[in-house]
Amino acid sequence: MRSTGSPRTASPRRGARIGALAAALAGVVALAGCGASASTSTTPSGSGSATFKPAGQKDGAQITVWADSTRLPSVQAYQKSHPDVKMKIVTYDGGADGSTYLQTKVQLFDRTGSGWPDVVFGSPTDVTWASAPTKPGAKPFAAPLDQSLVPQATLAGFAKGSLAPCQFNGHTYCMRNDIAQVVLWYNKTLMDKWGYQVPTTWDQYEALGEKVAKEHPGYLVGSVGDTNSQESYFWSSQCPAFQSTGPNSLRVALKDPKCTRMSTLLDKLIAAKAVSTEGFFSQGFAKSSGSKVLMAYGPSWYGQYLFKAAFNTPAKQMAASAPLTWPGETTPSTGNVGGGVWMVSSHSANLKASTDLVTWLTTSNDNQAAAPTYPAYAPAATAWLANPANRDYFATDVSGPFQQAANEVWTGWSNTKFSDATAWSSVVLPALTAGKTLTATLPAWQSAISDEAKADGYQVTNQ
Image 1 (cartoon, helix red, strand yellow):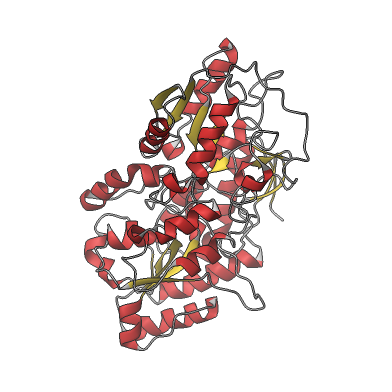
Image 2: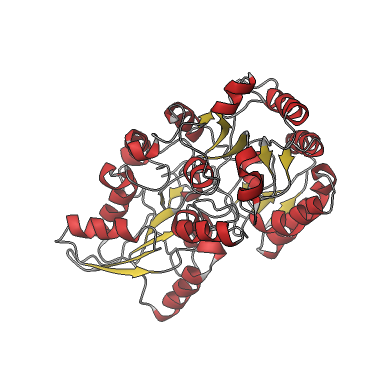
């Protein structure tokens, strides 16, 4: 789990009660994704470099599949429904918490010339190295799926921008398992009781937050205290904190107005005590304040895994609405807090079976309709939303907001070789705890991101 317990590769620091939730969600959150989730390449899939040259193929050869514990049942279900496919299934951490286990193993296999798994589940961060050779003369670990492996019609069925983390040098190197598009969560029961209108703009959100602080002290409209809060707020504001400008170039420009507009808004709400600097998943929060969260700007998995599982909010109270807009904007942009990927090895001797497995895992209604988090493949997401387990808890139908937000994730928050949570956790959160404002902390956050990027070989611009 990544810090706030998102279905991805991070994990929050919780206490005993939230720790139990973390264990229960270990896979869901563990790898719904890791770090930023947009592409580092703007080249359209299929228009790139050299033609892919497969290894020698052996029809019927056994395929080795590496999956995390959460995705293990899905792989086993495929095996049961496809008994003719020979499979060896290995459980590993799936890249959770920034693990480099897969990368280290692939580097070893590249040196020895054997041992590569055929299919792996991982995080978007894994794709940054898997789409490039680990040494001169080697080929990338991940196979370009758009080169005669997966039909373009299938790739086109994914939510807009959701395959961006998979796309490098003009090709598509993975298929997205799930996404965690950010929406506005609100307690409909309390909103109706107090006569409040659900905000549709950030100005309205700010005004309502200040009103709540005066009329109902102690109630909250959000939190910035978790290690992926920046993905809900600053990503949704189109802040260029992790904006790729080339294969190894990154723009980290936190003085940009699209960063400062969000920091200024949040500083006002923090000062009014309407937005908490304590994380939703921090120790004791659920007990002390879980019942006082009126609104939360956060990922689609918040409904089930934050409000239902952590806060024990009664059924038929929580609802979701579409992402908020800024002045002058007609179409909102939103963030993403999760989403894992499946990759096929370029070394596989049975690309047909490997590709079929990955396609089934990401697109099949048989698998995705019962998945723990929102599928990236649009037709499968429709089946997921039709599943009573994913809708009956809520006060209203979440289908519209979820589907809209799925196509509005801003692709300018780029997938990088390092996690976007590190600098936020090590620099911003301690500053907030010490009473500093977000706006005053932006320069230090920018420096920390820039230093990480340079250490990973990026050319960084701060303009």
